[in-house]
Picture 1 (tube, one colour):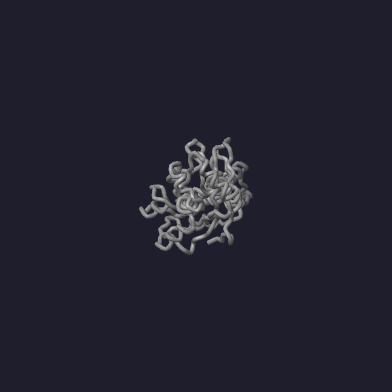
Picture 2 (cartoon, helix red, strand yellow):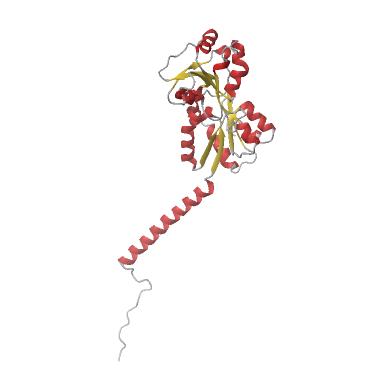
Length: 287
């Protein structure tokens, strides 16, 4: 009796529609998870918290620079403000001498050089970012004095009921040089008011504590409630170059250098200029 015909079975059985759908879901989900994991690894590997101590002269420009840098790099900047000179607890030289750490320092270049010579900051990373002159401000809505000439500035100081200045670079110049050159040291002695620490002179002007304030132009322009009158006459002007450098003890040296490079970009230069600062000559170059 002949055997019944045996049907040959294929080694590759057709997969049901349900199986195909499930495989696609699993494959798609795996791809998404892998991409997300890769993104987290990249961000985690490169993101850092950068501690920065900076002069208030760059505070206006940093409002834009910090936002753009953090968005573009995923790094986070912790900014602490202070004057480049002075003896208060918030003065940058005092803080550095007491051992306060910072990955990046931004301050008046001449004072930066002193800290570099002491081995606190890396000379090879030093870069000039901007420069600023000293200006005069009054409370918004108040009369703007004539300060266009040496004689008119002198008279404005004599007429003012009170005069405010910082303990930083601009204030040091005002007390050690400007008032002496104008011959008004004794005449204005009782109405001079030192604004110590990180507080801007403009803040005292806005509160009505001083009638006339002198400070770096960018620092006067950043405070609401202050009218910027204008710069000191050319014959009396003092230009301060603002520089940055990476600390010898930086916790995040690579991220710190990345921030310095960012400060030398065209975008950062535009922010500096729009805040009332001028670009250095020659222009800043990346480290």
